[in-house]
Image (cartoon, rainbow, N blue to C red):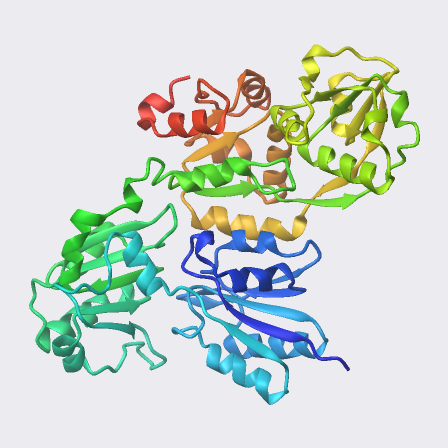
Length: 484
């Protein structure tokens, strides 16, 4: 039997842009992905549509799959001859148990590669404005587990060596043991005034920090109800944070956005929001199946309407494959949305919006049947692809919504509203209850009308229905941004 190959991949600390090129390439070719809780689920969207996704999440109080089961699964899928990715938060070699997984694969002579990732113990401090080393403040750095496999979970460390010999110490997943950590460091020589900072969900837009000293940080954590996942950083280098903090100064830092999605392609709007510091959950995810196109009568139409940017790409791909001279298509082009018009413009065609067009028998609609709801009964339709809800992602989104603290919902188009509500229902969420405490933003008057028609709350819209307009609107203080 043909053996597969396993890639043990570090997903980085959270920001999807921090995964390595090699790690992303492994995801794009994967047939099976076993992923952890701390690996950003957005990375799974780069996998092929038929990739099998297996959640191996570990919480402090329970494991979905124990390590032995994960090892067995890696071996089982590898022996089936499949390309497998084990996606682990941070770097797989830093408290990621990659050695145990690699040993299990080696035992069965299954080929594997280990792909390093950026460790959260370095990345989270940098996103909080703290380099872990500095010529004037810290010449040494240690990465330490704050929780071991002993009965009480308290690590047996060389506390004196840490306290006296290391300038900056990063403790992983140690919020529960914080009083024990502080007490031992002070007992073995660290001054009680030594700065300490906790960084929760480091590199995400939801990143939070809590700063204190060895003497008072434990009490502050209790008062703030601060919890894992968090890095605990100890050292004088923390004093640099006031000067070089950068991530938390981004205009949309703290925004946790639920973005309604209708497209199967990557969202430029989501990318723009994340660039400005927001956490973005795109919902729902769609799965596309291409359909065969018959373009033998394409030259007979006077007008062609493209229902979506994807339909533009699919149409022109078929034109090339069927060796049709584009000059023979005499029709005027129309777009059902600004995005569709832009997709046509990128190919050298100036299109008009469908509002400037009347229904006729010489009209061809390219896309899917959803546009027929807009009243085009005489027109003919070419379905370029079938789009269905990707149900494999529903439990993934449910976990994302439960772990995040979403405060903003954005509807980019009127067509996104109904699909969003239906998909939330599939996840077991009532859209009205979920959105009632959030800022609900509509991109344009038609979109706002669709939101109101669906019975959802609405808090306003940007002056301009563009990426830049939305960023400027969301950067306003919430009380102003919420004005309808």
